Length: 322
Image 1: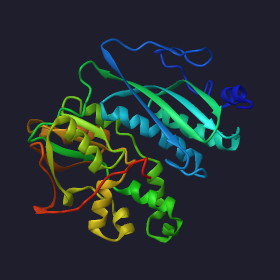
Image 2 (image 1 turned 60 degrees about the vertical axis):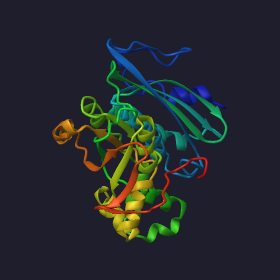
Image 3 (image 1 turned 90 degrees about the horizontal axis):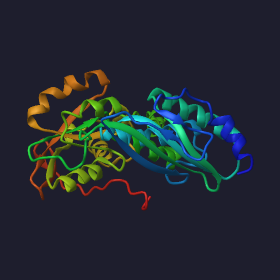
Image 4 (image 1 turned 180 degrees about the vertical axis):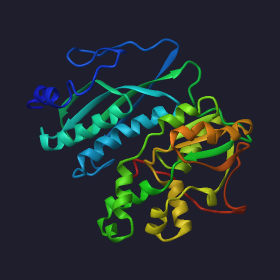
């Protein structure tokens, strides 16, 4: 990329105070970091591609938030505390009008969560971003997908379905005339990673996952890895008033809540003996949590409305089918 090093120096170098565990970041072939003792390092990599994860003309500040927040959410799902991030950015041409708001938003979110950019790359090509985040989790304490047991309770954080409504608006601008369209479009991009909630669940939850491909799909990952089934009461799904007003139908809003991708909320399971501790443990995180069902034996999966079985045929988001 023409002017690559000038762009790196101007927009990415010396934007943050050095963390004590970062010995060397920009300016050499590799970053050098020193993790604390008695922790494991959780690592997650995600790629966002223009035209698949965001429109080319999307607000670059929102794109930056979405890119970093989606990666932080992976750490939150395992109860990890964020520490470091690297970023590979591909752009068709150097575009400082795009880079400035992108970097301002990126570093604002990184600083909020105490994350330091320790390296990366820039190159010429179709607009895309690849981020690798790393965080710390106490040894042998990480939340995983394979720990759910029959009888555990199923919870989710936040509200569900708003991101799908926001995506509908992005792909079909005629929907901007519907109630709360601006709010829902913003929520699609500006999710809140549940880091504090994830850390609080380390001693309480039996399994966890972040909701990136839709609750119906992501819960299925827990069920498969844990070799269990589930019963979900759709009347308990947390749905915002904005979503309900936008779609105008409770049943449709419930289906949005089950299939909405890129929510970046947490879905987790809790044993009966820990259920009474959830509200108090998460009180400091300012995170709404809702119990929506219970783990059942393997092979049993049902959606019901206060006991009335439903035959909805739903699936989550698939990037290769989008």
